[in-house]
Length: 280
Image (cartoon, rainbow, N blue to C red; front, side, top):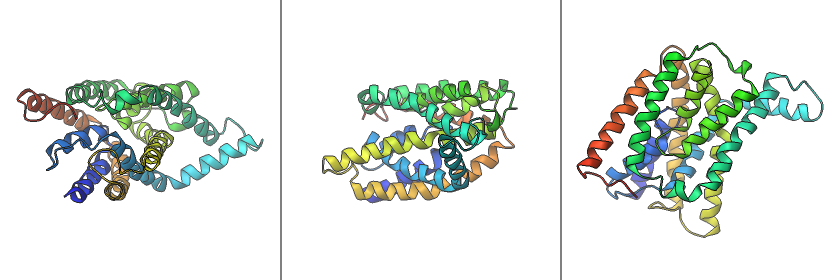
Protein backbone atom coordinates (compact mmCIF):
# COMPACT_ATOMS: atom_id res chain seq x y z
CA UNK A 1 0.00 0.00 0.00
CA UNK A 2 2.88 2.39 0.76
CA UNK A 3 3.99 2.26 -2.88
CA UNK A 4 0.55 3.38 -4.02
CA UNK A 5 0.43 6.10 -1.38
CA UNK A 6 3.90 7.34 -2.35
CA UNK A 7 2.91 7.51 -6.04
CA UNK A 8 -0.30 9.35 -5.15
CA UNK A 9 1.60 11.87 -3.03
CA UNK A 10 4.02 12.34 -5.93
CA UNK A 11 1.02 13.18 -8.10
CA UNK A 12 -0.17 15.73 -5.52
CA UNK A 13 3.33 17.21 -5.32
CA UNK A 14 3.50 17.61 -9.10
CA UNK A 15 0.03 19.16 -9.27
CA UNK A 16 0.55 21.70 -6.48
CA UNK A 17 4.23 22.68 -6.40
CA UNK A 18 3.99 25.45 -8.98
CA UNK A 19 0.53 26.73 -8.12
CA UNK A 20 0.25 29.32 -5.31
CA UNK A 21 -1.59 26.88 -3.03
CA UNK A 22 1.29 25.24 -1.07
CA UNK A 23 2.43 21.75 -2.04
CA UNK A 24 3.80 21.01 1.45
CA UNK A 25 0.40 21.78 2.96
CA UNK A 26 -1.32 19.48 0.47
CA UNK A 27 1.08 16.61 1.16
CA UNK A 28 0.49 17.03 4.89
CA UNK A 29 -3.30 17.20 4.49
CA UNK A 30 -3.62 14.36 1.97
CA UNK A 31 -1.43 12.16 4.16
CA UNK A 32 -4.09 12.38 6.87
CA UNK A 33 -6.64 10.71 4.60
CA UNK A 34 -4.49 7.91 3.24
CA UNK A 35 -4.88 4.39 4.73
CA UNK A 36 -1.71 4.81 6.80
CA UNK A 37 -2.92 8.21 8.00
CA UNK A 38 0.67 9.32 8.49
CA UNK A 39 2.37 12.63 7.88
CA UNK A 40 4.72 12.06 4.90
CA UNK A 41 7.31 14.11 6.78
CA UNK A 42 9.52 17.06 5.92
CA UNK A 43 12.23 14.80 4.46
CA UNK A 44 9.83 13.06 2.04
CA UNK A 45 8.46 16.46 1.01
CA UNK A 46 11.92 17.93 0.40
CA UNK A 47 13.14 14.92 -1.60
CA UNK A 48 9.99 14.64 -3.74
CA UNK A 49 10.38 18.32 -4.58
CA UNK A 50 13.58 17.36 -6.40
CA UNK A 51 11.32 15.85 -9.04
CA UNK A 52 9.30 19.00 -9.64
CA UNK A 53 12.41 21.17 -9.54
CA UNK A 54 14.10 18.94 -12.12
CA UNK A 55 11.04 19.62 -14.27
CA UNK A 56 11.81 23.35 -13.93
CA UNK A 57 15.39 22.76 -15.09
CA UNK A 58 14.21 20.77 -18.12
CA UNK A 59 11.46 23.26 -18.99
CA UNK A 60 13.72 26.32 -18.70
CA UNK A 61 16.88 24.57 -19.88
CA UNK A 62 17.78 27.09 -22.58
CA UNK A 63 17.18 30.05 -20.27
CA UNK A 64 19.21 28.47 -17.48
CA UNK A 65 22.15 27.64 -19.75
CA UNK A 66 22.11 31.18 -21.17
CA UNK A 67 22.05 32.71 -17.67
CA UNK A 68 24.83 30.49 -16.33
CA UNK A 69 27.00 31.08 -19.40
CA UNK A 70 26.58 34.84 -19.14
CA UNK A 71 27.20 34.81 -15.39
CA UNK A 72 30.43 32.82 -15.61
CA UNK A 73 31.49 34.95 -18.58
CA UNK A 74 31.12 38.10 -16.47
CA UNK A 75 33.42 36.59 -13.82
CA UNK A 76 36.10 36.19 -16.51
CA UNK A 77 35.64 39.78 -17.61
CA UNK A 78 33.55 38.93 -20.65
CA UNK A 79 30.34 40.86 -21.05
CA UNK A 80 28.75 43.57 -18.93
CA UNK A 81 27.41 43.07 -15.42
CA UNK A 82 24.40 45.05 -16.59
CA UNK A 83 23.53 42.26 -19.01
CA UNK A 84 20.04 41.02 -17.97
CA UNK A 85 21.25 37.40 -17.88
CA UNK A 86 24.26 38.26 -15.72
CA UNK A 87 22.06 40.26 -13.39
CA UNK A 88 19.56 37.38 -13.25
CA UNK A 89 22.34 35.01 -12.18
CA UNK A 90 23.35 37.28 -9.32
CA UNK A 91 19.74 37.89 -8.33
CA UNK A 92 18.96 34.17 -8.07
CA UNK A 93 22.02 33.75 -5.83
CA UNK A 94 21.13 36.80 -3.74
CA UNK A 95 17.47 35.83 -3.48
CA UNK A 96 18.37 32.33 -2.26
CA UNK A 97 20.30 33.55 0.78
CA UNK A 98 17.32 34.34 3.09
CA UNK A 99 15.69 30.91 2.79
CA UNK A 100 19.02 29.13 3.33
CA UNK A 101 19.82 31.08 6.50
CA UNK A 102 16.31 30.83 7.96
CA UNK A 103 16.00 27.19 6.93
CA UNK A 104 19.13 26.30 8.91
CA UNK A 105 18.24 28.44 11.93
CA UNK A 106 14.69 27.11 12.23
CA UNK A 107 15.16 23.58 10.91
CA UNK A 108 13.78 21.90 14.03
CA UNK A 109 10.65 24.06 14.12
CA UNK A 110 10.07 23.51 10.39
CA UNK A 111 10.21 19.73 10.82
CA UNK A 112 8.09 19.64 13.98
CA UNK A 113 6.30 22.62 15.54
CA UNK A 114 5.25 24.30 12.29
CA UNK A 115 3.74 21.08 10.95
CA UNK A 116 0.38 21.80 12.55
CA UNK A 117 -2.87 21.93 10.57
CA UNK A 118 -4.30 24.81 12.61
CA UNK A 119 -1.34 26.88 11.40
CA UNK A 120 -1.69 25.54 7.85
CA UNK A 121 -5.39 26.45 7.72
CA UNK A 122 -4.61 29.96 8.95
CA UNK A 123 -1.77 30.60 6.51
CA UNK A 124 -3.80 29.25 3.59
CA UNK A 125 -6.50 31.85 4.22
CA UNK A 126 -4.33 34.80 5.29
CA UNK A 127 -1.82 34.51 2.46
CA UNK A 128 -4.65 33.79 0.03
CA UNK A 129 -6.15 37.16 0.94
CA UNK A 130 -2.74 38.85 0.59
CA UNK A 131 -2.40 37.31 -2.88
CA UNK A 132 -5.84 38.65 -3.77
CA UNK A 133 -4.83 42.16 -2.73
CA UNK A 134 -1.53 41.95 -4.60
CA UNK A 135 -3.26 40.75 -7.77
CA UNK A 136 -5.84 43.54 -7.53
CA UNK A 137 -3.52 46.49 -6.77
CA UNK A 138 -0.45 45.40 -8.74
CA UNK A 139 0.32 47.39 -11.87
CA UNK A 140 1.28 44.30 -13.91
CA UNK A 141 3.79 46.26 -16.00
CA UNK A 142 7.34 45.18 -15.10
CA UNK A 143 9.11 42.39 -16.96
CA UNK A 144 12.02 40.30 -15.68
CA UNK A 145 14.45 42.39 -17.71
CA UNK A 146 13.62 45.23 -15.28
CA UNK A 147 14.38 43.18 -12.15
CA UNK A 148 16.58 45.14 -9.72
CA UNK A 149 18.79 43.98 -6.85
CA UNK A 150 16.44 45.63 -4.36
CA UNK A 151 13.53 43.69 -5.79
CA UNK A 152 15.65 40.54 -5.80
CA UNK A 153 16.08 40.82 -2.02
CA UNK A 154 12.34 41.28 -1.55
CA UNK A 155 11.67 38.23 -3.73
CA UNK A 156 14.12 36.23 -1.61
CA UNK A 157 12.51 37.27 1.67
CA UNK A 158 9.09 36.37 0.28
CA UNK A 159 10.35 32.94 -0.79
CA UNK A 160 11.66 32.34 2.74
CA UNK A 161 8.09 32.60 4.05
CA UNK A 162 7.46 29.26 2.33
CA UNK A 163 9.30 27.60 5.21
CA UNK A 164 5.94 27.95 6.98
CA UNK A 165 3.60 25.20 5.69
CA UNK A 166 0.60 26.67 3.91
CA UNK A 167 2.31 29.82 2.65
CA UNK A 168 3.50 28.37 -0.70
CA UNK A 169 6.90 29.00 -2.23
CA UNK A 170 5.46 30.13 -5.55
CA UNK A 171 2.62 31.97 -3.79
CA UNK A 172 5.00 34.01 -1.65
CA UNK A 173 7.29 35.04 -4.48
CA UNK A 174 4.42 35.66 -6.90
CA UNK A 175 2.66 37.86 -4.35
CA UNK A 176 5.83 39.89 -3.81
CA UNK A 177 6.27 40.25 -7.57
CA UNK A 178 2.72 41.47 -8.07
CA UNK A 179 3.08 44.02 -5.25
CA UNK A 180 6.24 45.33 -6.91
CA UNK A 181 4.43 45.78 -10.21
CA UNK A 182 5.58 42.76 -12.21
CA UNK A 183 3.28 41.03 -14.68
CA UNK A 184 1.59 37.83 -13.55
CA UNK A 185 3.67 35.71 -15.92
CA UNK A 186 6.95 37.42 -15.01
CA UNK A 187 6.32 36.92 -11.30
CA UNK A 188 5.49 33.25 -11.86
CA UNK A 189 8.48 32.64 -14.13
CA UNK A 190 10.91 34.20 -11.65
CA UNK A 191 9.41 32.22 -8.76
CA UNK A 192 10.30 29.03 -10.66
CA UNK A 193 13.89 30.10 -11.35
CA UNK A 194 14.47 31.42 -7.83
CA UNK A 195 13.34 28.14 -6.28
CA UNK A 196 16.00 26.05 -8.05
CA UNK A 197 18.93 26.55 -5.60
CA UNK A 198 16.74 26.36 -2.48
CA UNK A 199 14.82 23.23 -3.49
CA UNK A 200 17.84 21.34 -4.76
CA UNK A 201 19.79 22.38 -1.66
CA UNK A 202 17.15 21.18 0.80
CA UNK A 203 16.39 18.04 -1.20
CA UNK A 204 20.00 16.90 -1.47
CA UNK A 205 20.58 17.76 2.18
CA UNK A 206 17.72 15.46 3.18
CA UNK A 207 19.13 12.76 0.89
CA UNK A 208 22.50 13.14 2.61
CA UNK A 209 20.89 12.71 6.03
CA UNK A 210 19.01 9.63 4.85
CA UNK A 211 22.11 7.87 3.47
CA UNK A 212 24.41 9.10 6.24
CA UNK A 213 22.16 7.34 8.76
CA UNK A 214 21.87 4.29 6.49
CA UNK A 215 18.12 4.42 6.88
CA UNK A 216 15.08 4.84 4.69
CA UNK A 217 13.47 8.24 4.27
CA UNK A 218 12.16 9.74 7.48
CA UNK A 219 8.48 9.13 7.93
CA UNK A 220 6.41 6.20 6.64
CA UNK A 221 8.17 5.87 3.27
CA UNK A 222 11.38 4.12 2.39
CA UNK A 223 13.97 5.21 -0.18
CA UNK A 224 12.41 3.29 -3.07
CA UNK A 225 8.95 4.69 -2.41
CA UNK A 226 10.32 8.21 -2.13
CA UNK A 227 12.12 7.80 -5.47
CA UNK A 228 8.85 6.68 -7.08
CA UNK A 229 7.07 9.77 -5.73
CA UNK A 230 9.88 11.97 -7.05
CA UNK A 231 9.63 10.51 -10.56
CA UNK A 232 5.84 10.93 -10.63
CA UNK A 233 6.21 14.51 -9.37
CA UNK A 234 8.64 15.26 -12.20
CA UNK A 235 6.29 14.11 -14.96
CA UNK A 236 3.19 15.83 -13.59
CA UNK A 237 5.09 18.98 -12.62
CA UNK A 238 6.50 19.42 -16.12
CA UNK A 239 2.99 19.48 -17.57
CA UNK A 240 1.74 21.90 -14.91
CA UNK A 241 4.51 24.47 -15.57
CA UNK A 242 3.46 25.00 -19.19
CA UNK A 243 -0.23 25.12 -18.33
CA UNK A 244 0.25 27.54 -15.44
CA UNK A 245 2.34 30.05 -17.41
CA UNK A 246 -0.25 30.09 -20.20
CA UNK A 247 -3.09 30.46 -17.70
CA UNK A 248 -1.67 33.45 -15.81
CA UNK A 249 -0.70 35.22 -19.04
CA UNK A 250 -4.38 35.88 -19.68
CA UNK A 251 -6.17 35.32 -16.35
CA UNK A 252 -5.91 36.50 -12.75
CA UNK A 253 -4.98 34.49 -9.66
CA UNK A 254 -8.54 34.74 -8.32
CA UNK A 255 -9.30 31.02 -8.69
CA UNK A 256 -6.30 30.14 -6.51
CA UNK A 257 -7.33 32.70 -3.89
CA UNK A 258 -10.81 31.18 -3.58
CA UNK A 259 -9.33 27.68 -3.47
CA UNK A 260 -6.96 28.61 -0.63
CA UNK A 261 -9.76 30.18 1.38
CA UNK A 262 -12.12 27.24 0.82
CA UNK A 263 -9.45 24.70 1.77
CA UNK A 264 -8.49 26.68 4.87
CA UNK A 265 -12.10 26.90 6.03
CA UNK A 266 -12.62 23.19 5.36
CA UNK A 267 -9.59 22.40 7.49
CA UNK A 268 -10.96 24.49 10.36
CA UNK A 269 -14.22 22.53 10.19
CA UNK A 270 -12.48 19.14 10.06
CA UNK A 271 -10.18 20.07 12.93
CA UNK A 272 -13.01 21.57 14.96
CA UNK A 273 -15.05 18.37 14.74
CA UNK A 274 -11.97 16.19 15.39
CA UNK A 275 -12.25 14.48 12.00
CA UNK A 276 -8.48 14.85 11.65
CA UNK A 277 -5.73 15.64 14.12
CA UNK A 278 -3.69 18.82 13.91
CA UNK A 279 -0.25 17.31 14.50
CA UNK A 280 1.92 14.63 13.01
